[in-house]
Length: 505
Image (tube, rainbow, N blue to C red; front, side):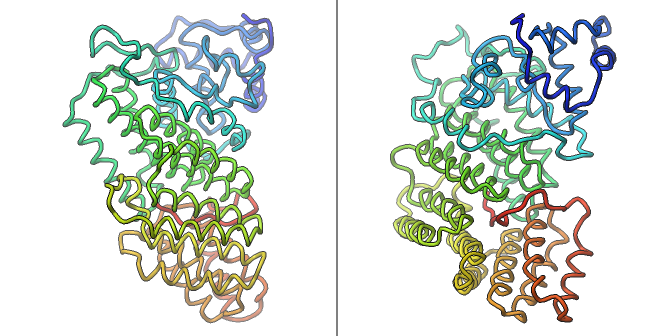
């Protein structure tokens, strides 16, 4: 017992709206449902947890995590409740909260434990409310401060790292990983099958959006977390961490795609940790660049630029030219959101130079193969379209870039085609070309039915806003009515600011 209040538990307790006596009764009832009928908690114990910082014994922390997850409509982990007994995370609530969110960085075994607990909670979460009260993103500057030095050191999975005596002895894991299923070591064929599953999920997401397959990806990631409980030979362990990184990025991107923003950010952070343990620093940087894109989407471009600095520094000394090009396009979009036209144009120029420098001499990692010339033009269109709200003359360039992207898109990239059409239509409306704006807006709208991406609806809502200046014109009024009628009720905007971007996975 620390003798100090557990502020993390106290804050979430206040959001949940329970009394201390009610929480005690809920803990007993939930524990019985989870197979612990002997548990007997009372009001005084709850008071000690909250006011005195007492950490209850197992299984109470995971029971509390399950209760808060259900009540708040978002994943709440043992660490979120301040109930971890050891390591950096347990100190965080006292004096490290702003500097080191979520006790970052984590040791390898902690990453596996957090991964397993978080995915398990995500799978059981009732999504009726999607994102509950109090769900919040860690600031990009806070993540950057916590992870900068760590990302630039060698991963703990080194030849001289401490090892259990046998390869199938589990790594140490704290109570966050207590729900891990009976894991078993795997071989190269199983890992190859897992790597193939990533490609299948990635292709599905690019075509249809993240809503329909998100839980399948999270479930697969949960399985991999269990596998990481064993110490495999280094070459297999690194491949497993690589699978975990790829699945975590997908889970994060799919969560962002359907509006689960804090959940998405947590997956991006998990992905960065997993990628570093796999020895793939560029993948760690790309995972963090996803979090930066998320910040721009949510109207926080300054936080996005902080994360891009971290993504770039964490990518290693010599990332591939195409990876550099991709990072520059995100940085340019953030600059456009802030109205920094000169900086945006300079950054897009660097993106073009690096993309042109890619001669195909080095094998491209699977996670970069989706960023092609169409994506380069699509991101340029998005940046110029975003800048056009500050500098209307940029609308013409946005239209040209969007058309170039559409000419290169394949049928499998349906979501990206929708984004291109929306960027193009939006640029036409900004540029007073109503006829073409309506044409491309209709093409986007006609493709929306088979897509499960909330971000596309967000972008469509932004486009509809731009038509407001032409209210009263018959074609515009009809389009506005059709957009409003087609939008799902859940697709209300949660933020003001820049529109969301084109997507690659």
